[in-house]
Length: 121
Image (tube, rainbow, N blue to C red):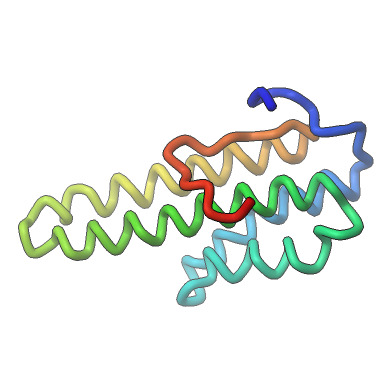
């Protein structure tokens, strides 16, 4: 599907849950692994009854797993100093992408995260 294509006509409740798939990743700022656990919980609860949540939940999870891998690489690279520069850039990129995906989900549109590994299909 194209980035701005609407998944299907959805009501406000469906769009809100789709948006929460993405926004729940911000739990990672409070809870360890919350960036993966948050979207996983929302996706598991609503994926069967709301097709748009299934689509957005998979995308959010795939991106957050990709970001976890990127954080791990940055942490290892801290010992080579480059990680000190990369880590904040990766964190800002992740935050901006979550906000953009949340806005698109609230509009009922699909959002494809850049650089995201497609692990959950």
